Amino acid sequence: MTRPGRFRSALASGMFTVTAEIGPPRGADAEVIRRKVQPLRDWVAAVNITDNQSAVVRLASWAGSLLTLAIGVEPIMQLTCRDRNRIALQSDLLSAAAMGIPNILIMTGDHPRFGDHADAKPVFDLDSVQLLWAARTMRDDGRLLSGRVLDPPPDWFIGAVENPSAPPVNFRAARLGKKVAAGAQFVQTQFVFDVPAFARFMAQVRDLGLAERCHILAGVGPITSPRALSHLQHVVPGVHIPHEVVRRLLAVPADRFADEGLKLCAETICQLRQVPGVAGVHIMAVGHEHRVPEILAEAGLGRTPLAATGPGGADDAR
Amino acid sequence: MIERSDRLPPRPARLAGAPPQPVSPRLPARLLYRLHRLLAPNAGYRRLAAVLTAHPWLSRLFTAGERHVKEAIFGCRMCGQCAIPFTGYACPMTCPKQLRNGPCGGVGLDGSCEVYPESRCVWLLAVERADSEGKGPDLLRLHRPIDHRRLGQSAWISYWQGTDDGLCTDDDALATPAVINPAALLGHK
View 1 (cartoon, rainbow over the protein chains, first blue to last red):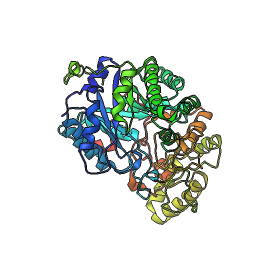
View 2 (cartoon, one colour):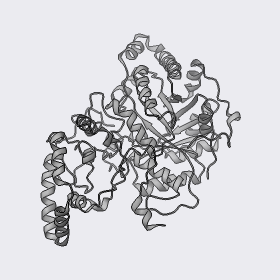
View 3 (cartoon, chains in turn red, blue):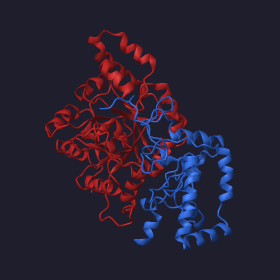
View 4 (spheres, one colour):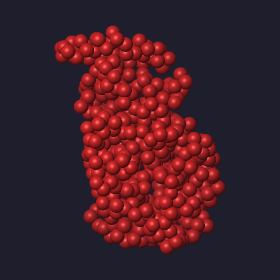
């Protein structure tokens, strides 16, 4: 059984909550995780550990989550539907609970075709809504998909993802509604670079009454080089970067590109704080995790008072 | 890493076991919503289903016919658990990730499929087609995990027999939480 974590308590308290994300290494080195997580510890409520992101093989998200937990930082274990059938997924979820991982984030996952094993079998036995639903059933009903009883049942804070900028844009809030109906308690979005478009999505989310039922963290991240910009535009699926943003970044000299990218990210965070219903931000600075504190300081967000919201804090409406 | 612009070599449209690829239905949504009424379960269809299941060779013949029709119109892959009455008659099993509850986050800005950029996302088609016929609320139903043992079976016979009734929830399940595994619960009190 896991205790209510800092992340969950922070969201329940209503404070603007920050999470970050790290990509585990390709290699058998645990030190990499510690090195990436350490600079974040006083700044964020929890750290996402990705599950073989972009369908490229890396250290597993459960292992990364345990390493993170061991140095006193709360992990959010990502779990995709791409590589495991319902037996393995439920087993991994159960294991996560038994090992004290308090937060899980469930998503469909990138198709293997664009990863380093394009010849792999895509599994997708369950979709993300079904896996959220299965996780909630395991926790709240104490049962597996087979109907068998779990004793004791697991207890995690269950999260989902959504991409507000991907077509069909007007269906995205409704799709989030399906995830909330299935069991999502928090959601982290794909990169937001177009704040007005995101605000329109949030208006729909509020109209559906989802902002009260689910904590919404907007995804942000610094674009630190022309190569990173091109990667986000052409390789990462479903990321939309408006022309103004591209023009602004390309207008600065090459040696100031990274600084401008960080500044832009901080400005985006400030704008997102003004959007009603936004509970916090999720910073995806994969490869530049050490610069997350700079971004937060620039955005006027101080260190997270972790001591004030320790384990056993306020619970939120489940 | 493969560049996203790379295309896979073309292959025959109806190769058994080929990976799923988005298919745009070859008949308009309005016509299909009407045709569906012709298949609605009644005493006659239930009797037909009983006869078919009693004679395996007849059932095989019938299923082969169903397969040809649905393959030609929807790119049917015979999952045996038809979701299309609730998805604007665009088949979600032709999605490369076989998502039955809506589009993934990788849909291109132009509406292209993440995996096959030359095809439109099948969920985009589903939303457009359902909305155009006033069936948008159907898209909010939660679809339960499919039973892989039923691959290749006739969905029409299941429909007439009522075995398909729990494939998805009756509504958006936001007001009252829905049970994911009602059949399994019966076996494990």
